[in-house]
Image 1 (cartoon, one colour):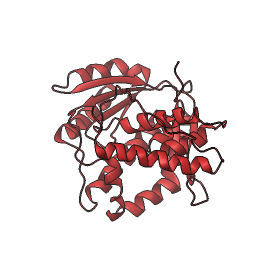
Image 2 (cartoon, helix red, strand yellow):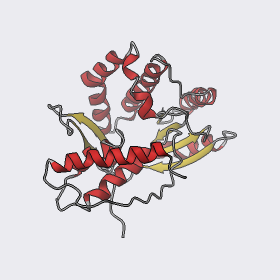
Image 3 (cartoon, rainbow, N blue to C red):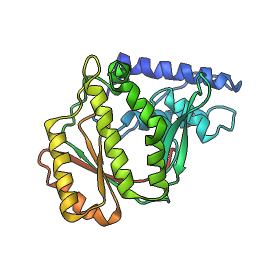
Image 4 (cartoon, helix red, strand yellow):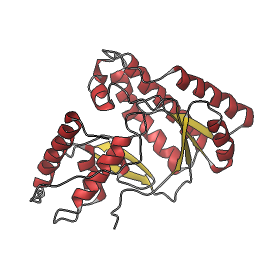
Length: 270
């Protein structure tokens, strides 16, 4: 994919912000850098491609500075390029928390549990590989215009994030299903009611959701759905449901299917 001027500007801004952050440790980048990206993740369809790229960028930059940075500090650098990238630094299950300050590190990633904690699978159904016209970064800047935004933020802070963390730590799939699906649809409801409205969900998205609910109920399967900023449906499941969920996914006409599972965080390659 050829980088557009907008893409290049995003990387330049990210590196400038990372330098500001590194300067607080007195370890700014001492030279210009060349970036080569080799990503197998299709962009702009709800697969968090920017999280993968910017977490990798932050990890790579951490290897170029003369400082022993923690994963939490690297997560701050990743977040400066893509908010969700802050979670991708860690293996297993990651989250983001607010710190009691308004500085550049006022929001930081942390690990809930490592990749060996709970073997969940993610079967991903992509109804359309067409790149979205409005990126999630641009769309998020208007989220505050939704009349439901303040309530959403408050509910996440008051109980929803902690409920999700508790469900992961206790491996309570039913509890995780409830909070994940509720939060997912709540997020999209906020986007659909912001100004201007932003609707990433397609008819195929809704159809897949309805059908997986029916399958789940009929066969009593531990599977949940969630959707990022795109029409793509992620079906997280436990081992016992994997074959049934994969069979369901591969019967979806005109859809791409990806299969993945809980993995390790960012790492250097030789």
